Length: 116
Length: 114
Image (cartoon, rainbow over all chains, first blue to last red; front, side, top):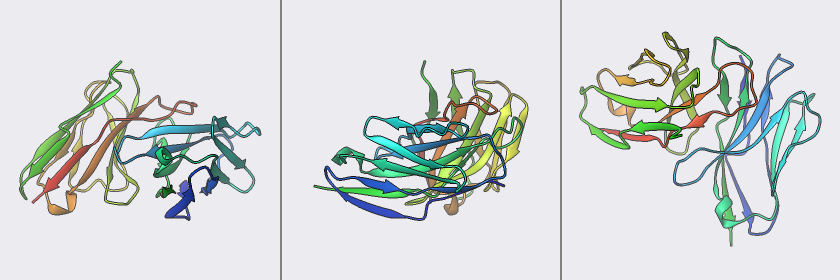
């Protein structure tokens, strides 16, 4: 079964600085997708960024970018120019290609604090 | 589109009571799931469904039932509530199979069992 690990339960960053959140996953599949979700205090789950495993190019969305290392099964999230509104729980997620089983596997999350 | 809706937003139950958390989506998604999130923790999968009439257990199914009679609705039933079921419950939906589309989440239901 696929597993997703986030080894940093908590992180903090100074406003305007850059922070990187780690995510590793375990799979025997060659085709899959990876996601980062943000959960602010409002509890709403918000998609931050997504990555196709067959693409070597790292995805970027404004201040958010990923470092996808397929061989190492690593999918880290970099937040540049951190803002107070970035403070949230961040979840890494893996999507399988199973049409009949569980599609998504989530990591345990990293709580990010942004210091003014 | 309303997306994924959940009702109620808050609920307080006494031990032993039963109730149903409602979840509906209007995006014609095949895949729907229920998660619970305990304080400071991640999401744990309770049950999921890959289409109408098909459901399966996730990581923590005990004490919960689900059914999927239509594509749109995926209710979660607590049979006999226990304090250990105090949690925030999220319903989510997506297209089934390998697609780039993400899983869409409802706003959550905060449940307290006394």
